[in-house]
Amino acid sequence: MLYALGLLLVPAAAVLLRAFRTDTGSFTLQNVRDMGAHQYVVAFRTSITLSILSAVVGVVFGGFLAYSVLSLQRPKWLRGALITFSGLGAQFGGVPLAFIFISTLGVTGVVTKFLNSAGLHLYPGFKIYSFTGLVIVYAYFQVPLMVIVITPAIEGLRVQWREAAANLGAADWQFWRYVGLPVLAPSILGAFVLLFANAFSAYATATALTSGQVNLVPVKVGSFLRGNVAADNAQLGQALATGMLVVVVVAMALYLWLQKRAARWAK
Image (cartoon, rainbow, N blue to C red; front, side):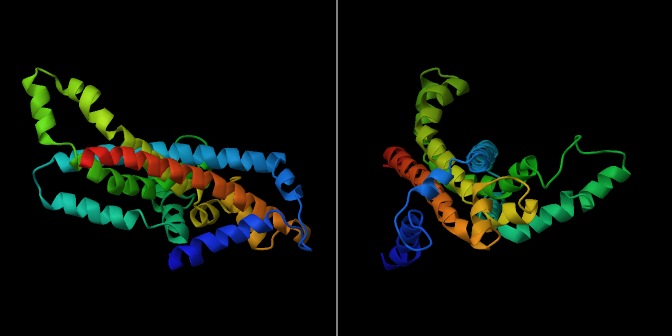
């Protein structure tokens, strides 16, 4: 409780209070009104779109990866290796991750040079420093996170259910349609919400990769914190951060509700 209070609740409350204060400390709603400016609306729209796309990529590829590995009997070491890598990959981000992709798929990256020398080129207009590049880079930690989150749910699918379905004459697709997917649905949706919140709050990776060229809310907030804007608009950064807090809190509340529904099948 002390940890949560000192490193989560108190900072969040401070951001919330400052969002409704002027430089002199008086109450105001102007900071919230300023959030309605076109560039900030676009920033929220872009951040939400990026978070949804990266979450979809993570759910699809991470879900199939986890199921395929858990379904294998051999080699036995592959499952442990996947879980270990997923634990590392889900936490790997920021400047190091951006640097790896820049040195690999950037204009002068190793892979880019190799493809160019072989007469093969990435699709026209592709740049790792773009919105599309962010989706690809985010997938590096979204897919492993999905593997970690969905693995217990997949392991919760009991063999007896599949055997019962087979004894009743159900095909594989019927088992997944009427048993497997309905049981996994709360876990999958919960994982999607978690991945959405994870991508929406990412800052260091996007900043290091795009240098602020993609209009994202975390990048905007970071520019205020670094003092790259006029001092008389500094409180606007707190208002934008409050908007992010609202989105993340709603996402996490939905995630916890879905997790409770998914827990029924683990009993």
